[in-house]
Image (cartoon, rainbow, N blue to C red; front, side, top):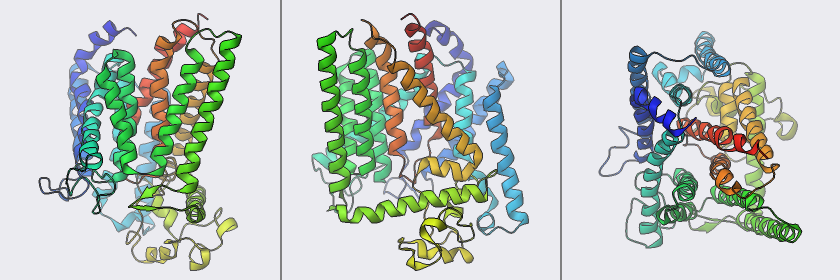
Length: 470
């Protein structure tokens, strides 16, 4: 699709396109109370609901005025499946007096479905509105400016040590963010800023964007979270692989140089990972020593096993949007997988910190309960069951297919111009998916929908068509 055609089709859908771009406001809403904004009354999740309602209203206006295209068959089946299992799960939960389903008001169950529904609607509208490169860049541009504000804030208050009790933790040792107020989310915004800014630098050749990308890198390190730092190195490593592959037509001597650079890059990458994971990383002014790593790994593996238990217990309907992890912590979920490795999960002797509190679910499933299984793919699966598993596997296999087909194509003189925009977005998506693997407060499925659709657009329109001529 050419840029002119995309521009000609943009005007009938300006309302929904603007509503999608407005979603970047979500990152400016504080999780905690600050003096100038009542976060406890209008938190980011409530704003998420308002943005979804606004997007639905804009969509209805455009459907009445211009009509709507039919969704793709696969997407239609997934959307129908989601709503069927959502309502079936609620009806079954109330009929069976399920402790988890009946522990919160009905409106909360509806609100919990918003991130999924909003992500599906954005995915559909991107295809319905026939987005071209300009629309994708406009949407990512709105996220870019918000993330850049967070990055500049981290430089001012963390690196330059300007006194501010709301951007740093209470000891001033790592960056929280005045608006974000949660160091896990801030580091993920740093990954987004680093990748999107570098894409704009490659496309527009402006040094301002290179500075912005470096600001995103600094924001990742200012939060001192191991997984985002690992994800940053991983994304950079993938980007270097693309660059070394398509920088020209290598001869024998150049191929040896490329092989040497590959080996050196891989060595530096694994050295960085070893330092950050095995030696430790600064968290709350302390170091997580390697001797404590075994407990952390054991807890993560136990959570993964419990996710499989939930999938076995509720394969078709899952636990429900933002409910599945509660079944993972519930003593009433049969331990079909975890029992083989950890025995009775209700016993304190299991050695897993915090899991002895599972008896709380007998009376109040949400009392003192964690808020996630600390893995976005696993939360996706336990929330949606087989549907979530299918979608996660589809994303993984599609990403592997894109990488394999592009990397096996022979380079030519203009390969960098063709491949690198795709490579930057691909590396950003991989880093972001790895970076959110331990977060509990990152639900911008609308952003994932935009990134995945943009990746597909770059692959088919900017890469596959040109690589076919090799």
